[in-house]
Image (cartoon, rainbow, N blue to C red; front, top):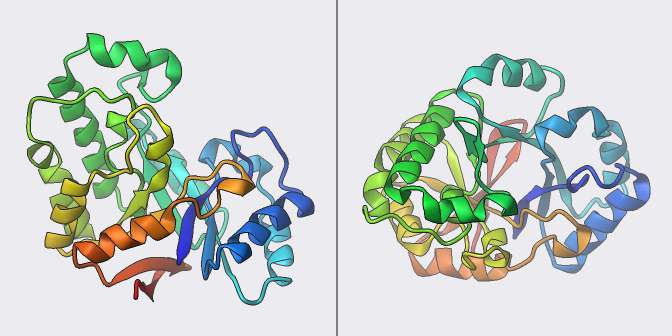
Length: 253
């Protein structure tokens, strides 16, 4: 099993110290992970300490420790992301959309807005921006595909129709989609993406990775065994890790 979405810095509420790194790697070891990927938010890049992560990782030879980034995609900021990615040889890069058209939609203060706005419209716009992220060529992975459901507001349109162009682009670009278990601990109380989307992703031959989206060490690997069982049930046989952008496959058996 692997966890390729872990935030060492949390929400920049701690430092990348040796003790903090070891706490994450200790939990990964306890939960039997084969690979862990640190992927802090791009706006905390200057607080990351990649050399220290690499140094501490030497004490965990049984664990593949990867260094990635979760980059916030905005259509007008592709050059900013390119410049950032040139600063370090990352193993993987998660492209995520937490806002569009100036609306940061996943913060608690915005929950009410999800029920005041037209869900068909904001779901459509969200997937338009995720499609642009997938087309950008900047990422190995698209994060929490249906994050827009975070507060439980649902569109009247079929989610498979809304996500169709996004999935077509992801497949064409050879990108990986994650099963992100953190949604269970949000108001929507379910993994990202929902099972119907997982089935469609599998049908299209798109590959999956796994991520807890842990912002603290105790949540590393949380619910990933269950996520793996769901993928196995729908016919997925392997999940994907990364080493310098090259895919590494792990059996779900």
